[in-house]
Length: 137
Image (cartoon, rainbow, N blue to C red; front, side, top):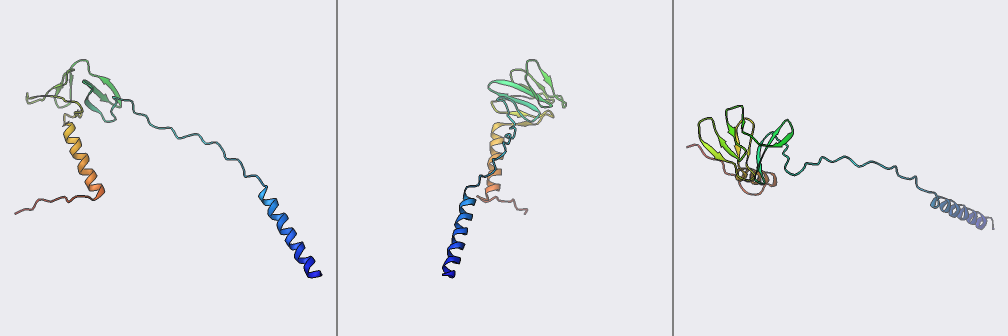
C-alpha cells in the first residue's frame, strides 16, 4: 500500500510539474530594425569615370554622377564630348558605345571587355574550364 501511494504521489507530482511548465509563456521577441540597404539608382555608377548609358554620357566624380553637357578634359589630355566622341591625346578618336566606360585617367573599357573579364572570373571562381598558360620556347 505504501509503495503504491509513493508511486502515485510521485506520478502526480511529475504530471503537475510538466503541466506547469507547458503553460509558461515564452518571452516576447524584441523588434529589430532592418539593416539599411545601399540603393544604387539607375544610371549611377559607383566608380569614377565616364559611362555611356541609354545614349547619354554620364560623368562620375567623387561619387556624384551628372550628365555630360559640355566637353570635358581628363588628366591625360583626353577630351570627351557630350555626344560620346572621345579624342585621345595622340589625335585618334573613338565613339563610346552603350555600356562603355572610361576612367578619369583615360583608360577605355568596352562592354565586350567587361563581359570577357566577367566570364574569366566566373571560370576561375567555379573551377570549370582549363586555363592554358603560354609556354616559353
